[in-house]
Image 1 (cartoon, rainbow, N blue to C red):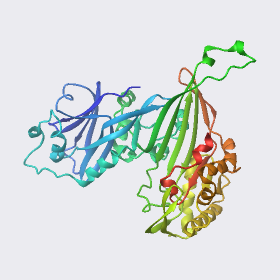
Image 2 (spheres, helix red, strand yellow; image 1 turned 30 degrees about the vertical axis):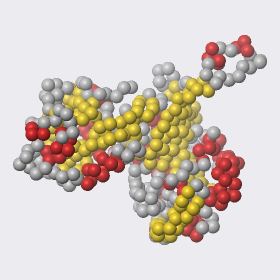
Image 3 (tube, rainbow, N blue to C red; image 1 turned 30 degrees about the horizontal axis):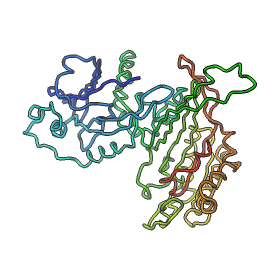
Length: 468
């Protein structure tokens, strides 16, 4: 599906921002009579009034609304680049290149946009009796973060944050599902989604088709179109060879890494778990392969150790492949009893998403900070007493020093609790009919949850090679 050609415009009287497609427009304007900052939102067909005013920017989608110091801003993706096709829906995936913020409730910020637009008319858009606002550090910071090349979206707003199994089976669409967990702007879309859901059915269908709203993930997305040589001819059934069997086998492979949005923060400053059961550096990684009518998906997750702990100090030490924060002093900040409620929330939430969780603990058994965390982790897991959650300790540093990363991969494959678990865990496999109907063949019945102290934050895990 091609994206609608959208643009953002400013109507001067009454002051309104307009996101326009070739056929429809979304109008947003401040509600003057309200005692506080409120907006009027309208969804209309394009007409003469919606096409008047100043064209401010191309629009690849609206990220939502944000209030900053009592002013309401609309966030617009002003440039994006395609990176591949999202299967099986054939939606285009884009990487965000630039984002801009436009103030809905004040003209003081208009000059920032109109000075740089060839059709802008500054004198007609800014009231010079009102002081011109200086660059706001929050605005610049938000634009810088969202334009750092790590945010992605697809044409259908809810698709990219959800893994393939949920997308193709139309499951898990509650308020707490993965589309909220991995969407970084869901809180900004609450008001506009409420407006969208309140539209009459026919209008809501038309609204959806315009692709006004987008939901972004942070992480990494890549898709590759590949071909394999045809299988070698069989001496027993040469007479059965067809053109299909002699043609190269075409398939696509997509890689998704979705960084969780619920416990964000910088490395060493944001660690462990919070009271809601969210952990830092939580990432869901998915490998998706599509060949003909067959669709294969495998998911694994990683995240910080689900305990309350902190790291202090500034020391760094050498580890396999680079530097680590082992010079930092690691200290638990809550007792086991005080930690247990958040610990249980974390795993109960995971078990709602995945049928079983197989923890691979890569922390060292010999380093004081890591060994104490591992012991506390195992104690909390014992108190959890859930058969669906199992742990294996795999001292990655010690093994890598002994046999190297290639040797580690072989050990992982040979370990009955890791490599041996893959066949039992299975994967999501489905077939697609020419009418795009999905028939589920198998489901992934568990997930690996990988953790280390900090090595996983900045180095690739050897686990993906398990699935070759």
